Length: 247
Image (cartoon, rainbow, N blue to C red; front, side):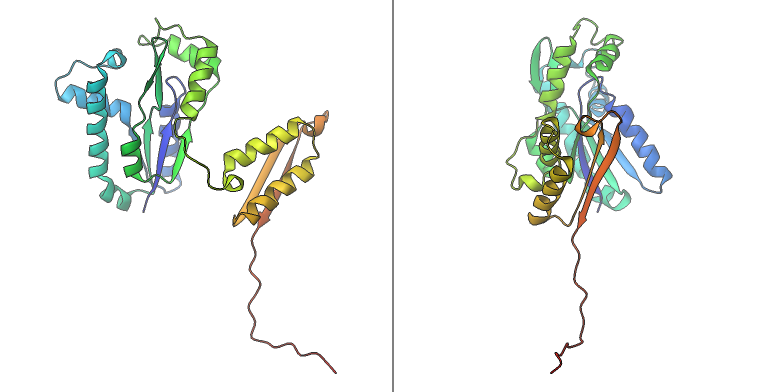
């Protein structure tokens, strides 16, 4: 069975380029990765259906038409899912969570279909707002929007939070563990204690292993360095020997 990955990222984040490079890199390691760029497939589907939809005008398209195109692409992906699971090591579905268009957020994350994909992993590609702004300024579709860095920063935050669900065990959620460690480091708490407690809590919550790496001017030191904490669950060796105490 292939690993199914849902990847989101705002326009200008370089999501498509990153994923294409990843697929090429994986191929060099003998792994087959299939990437579905949903937005690109929507445009191709629209052109096959005789609709005048291009990368330049797609965000001005009626939302019902957009939803129909998106659903059609998702259905097409699902139809090939069974065979793709046999042929590929990973299937990546690249989508937008939200669009920020004409100063308004437009939801494009379809919970119904995403649930049907039964994803194993969610990834959001982030980029420096300055770089995103420069990238979008070169695209005809986005030139008139003139997004500010603050708007792009907000858009990326919304994109990251698009999939919200209760966290059953915070100590097993890598993002929450990392966020908690960072918050404590900012308060200049002893890093060894921070890493040790985080690893202990994760193991107590049922983790099979933990690897935590931090880097930078830890504790305000003049020279940057890396520190790590690794913990793993070990099984006691089984033995048939019987220990007898001496008299």
